[in-house]
Image (cartoon, rainbow, N blue to C red; front, side):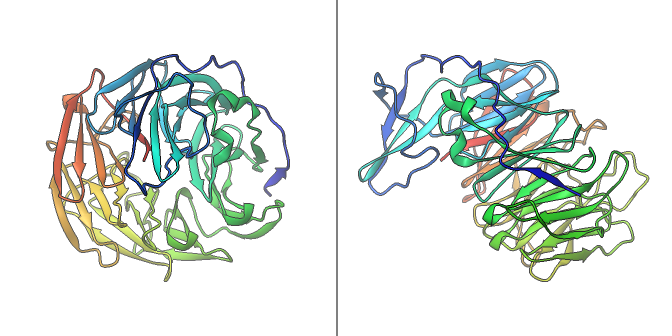
Length: 420
């Protein structure tokens, strides 16, 4: 049983210093531009000086810290040291990211903001800050944002923390964020997905076995559950709010009222990592068939149709890793292969649409924490890490060309992006 405590007023750590006093930059967008992250929310500092500024920033983890980069030029905006193995996730507000440490989700303010001003927008940027504010969590795990709510899962306790997009609008006020907290029956490597209307979808399991998922309404009452998903892992949201969770024999689909099984073609057909898009009812997933492999290097990916609960398998002719899956601006399925190319698939048919050469051929390392090429999509740009060259590439997905490459001062590992 999943238990909920609502409302719970748990305050976050509140010892962050004020934002850095570096110069604040701003630029006017063309008339009619829509508001972006934090639009018309954070008041700009009184000494803000107007100047041209890029509104996208990229965050890259490395062994010993995180880099914040300009999304257009890849210039290093800041280098923030932090010990331990680090992971990075969007915080859900278009401005901040969550950095997973050993015992918390730390809040990194990238400093980008858009403020509506009449018939145009003002773009502001301040110095990034790795704040002291954190969501405490034993073994921080998956982070999911859906329906303007971000959900954090702590594998060490099974505790789930959920907060709304507006709760992070002002970095100085993070001590006022009081996440709703839910408790799993047992600790496990899980995930929780916020649902429209205030409900949630969460995995079921313990330290040794994961069996399925349950859906709860806004009051914490159970709507439905399924035990038909052995080894449940990962989640993605598709068009119309359908949710896919991976299993060792396919996937399960939540359509808002019930769970449906999408059966794999093989007795063991594991889908553990997924990428969804609001532009497509198809979810892109990995696909592995060897339950005894220490490291399987699959060449097939799965396309899970949330409407029919069926799975199409596509052989790429090259292997890939769990950091290889992404979606394009129109819902295209993108897979970064070990041949060094981004393979662009039509999710509805599985047909190869384009092959974009980006990096040299590479081999997936045996340890999952070790750097390997990773892909992050923001708008019509794909950002691809090149650990062997300590570089990051920018790919224009509309033209299929690499438009920028920059060597960075540390070997990049995981990526996240913010801004407009």
